[in-house]
Length: 234
Ligand SMILES: N[C@@H](CCC(=O)N[C@@H](CS)C(=O)NCC(=O)O)C(=O)O
Image (cartoon, rainbow, N blue to C red; front, top):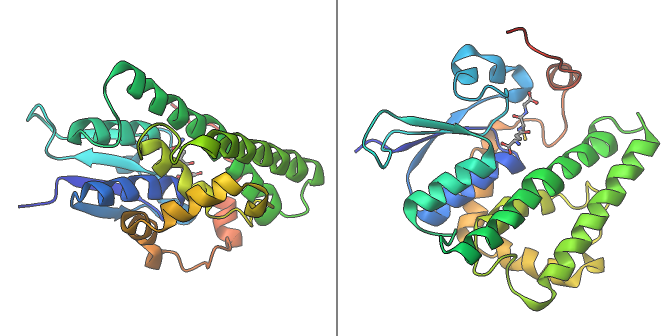
């Protein structure tokens, strides 16, 4: 039987969220590489399923209603879709559902974007703006503190192990590039080690690693594609 899921993907923290979840669910999937440094996110076929020209995106060829394939963009929405469909890692009772949702949205709106800006100003464009580098490094430090306090009296962010934890791990892994020291955050460090010990997390974050030849460094050509984007015409 053909695999139900196509994951439009490049091996980055946002892409890993989906491969980690699919590995945890033990669901087979095809990786469809979207080389964002080469501009493949602007191909019309990709924009048709991901109008924000960002990966990841998902196509489900076996949707629950048995109809046409469903496509979804935004990693948080993809995680909710898969977790709800398969009935794991996102409880559906009122309290449990919103306990997980708030931490998933916290990752989507806070941790992810601020870590991304920190990588930009500390690594990819080092020296471009000391003010911006410090501002985002401080904000990431604050967010790590929020996670550390949350994890002081519980093993995972929201009840049992959930999509909220899976969404965060890829953004904590490059903590050194974000100018952070995990020894300052003992509860977060314990969670981080628990997460890395999970086989599915390891496999999810290894998915498609061979696609990246840049060793974490970004070429000047990729910077031209990724930085300074302005509106596409309607
Ligand atoms: N909020 C989006 C963010 C996705 C995102 O920023 N993806 C980056 C790679 S990590 C991307 O595709 N960048 C392509 C570009 O900037 O053109 C999500 O979580 O799905």
